[in-house]
Length: 139
Image 1 (tube, helix red, strand yellow):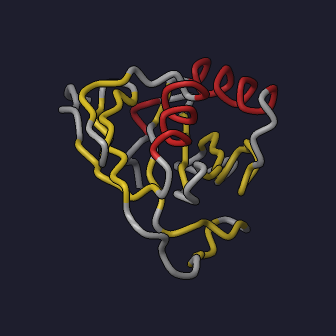
Image 2 (tube, rainbow, N blue to C red):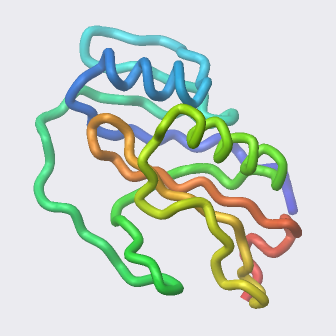
């Protein structure tokens, strides 16, 4: 796999203080620039920006391997040990999972560890891991 360039993602939040506590405190994302309306965070080398915005409408889900996956969602593919360390930290802090940490597509080409949870504004996050990172885009 070639090195991946950092991505940029701007997403809505309804409380910047809660976003700062969640992304900076719980997830451990270093904070970059900020204003009264937005905060930059370093999510494993990627720039995510929490923008103050009004609440959104109803949630949507799609079925994937027996789970109702929230749409939209975003996250990062971590190495195996980092994924399990994050899952343990989230459990210790009492995070309520949308989809508990589990193995998806067991025994198939796309086998992966995955977990879904929401930030304080209701944004869905998915973190995943592959024992074999070369399988990320395998068919």
